[in-house]
Image (cartoon, rainbow over all chains, first blue to last red; front, side, top):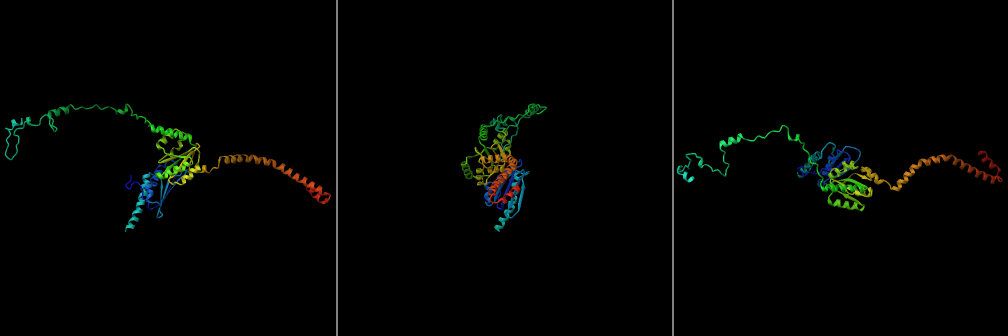
Length: 107
Length: 259
């Protein structure tokens, strides 16, 4: 898939909360995103990152909320997105934060 | 042949030898290692007599439409479907969960914990399950089966134990289930697990139904029972008054006046 091994470096992420209604038809992307983010590889990059999943039945659109370590929130409404788009959005923000930390550490 | 013609060729010292006369006889033979250039007359003949295939007026698909052969289900799929059918028939509780990449160790521990309560963990390919559910009354469960799904099946509906065990593994996300032929969501399963036992529910139901009728009966009987209670009290007081009447005649006048 992607060059970084189809997994994100979640070092800068504090919490990822995924909410969807399994009986709706637009949840495929959200569920795939959940699988990618909840995989061993992704979780091993940051053991403190909590991944919480809520399966509701209230016809609400699927929602992914990512809380970063510096307090910023990323809200992704997965009804019309694809899992790759969501993953790339998350990755870009993670790498934007991560090299800063790395570069600051090295220097 | 080359030996007889060598006389014609004049080997000039230091210049190599050039053929003075170009003759076919000492060109390449009929069978050569390289591709021999065709004679011009042969080339012309072949060009003129090239084959031009007739062009059909309509593409061949118009005459006979392309029929895709109906895909035959492989034996494994048939076997799995039979298995699923038996599953749905025999097991009262079937819950669907999504598996977010739990490793083998966790899966083993979870399986073992669930087996203690006689809940089996089943894995089926999603495509097979979806095509199977299409033709059953359970087709509304189809949207649950996307991605990596696991089935928890048990003959007795043991929702409470299942929920308690699943709390211990954060990777399994419960999506819904079918308990006793009723499709339930996660909230439904949680509520089901909180239900009291059968006998308690029956008792509650009976008491609820008879509450109204018993209230009506008590309301109807309220007045005559009140009256009879008052009369009894009066009789008691009368008898008490008559007994004490010899001692104190004044006290009896009060209850007589009140009645």
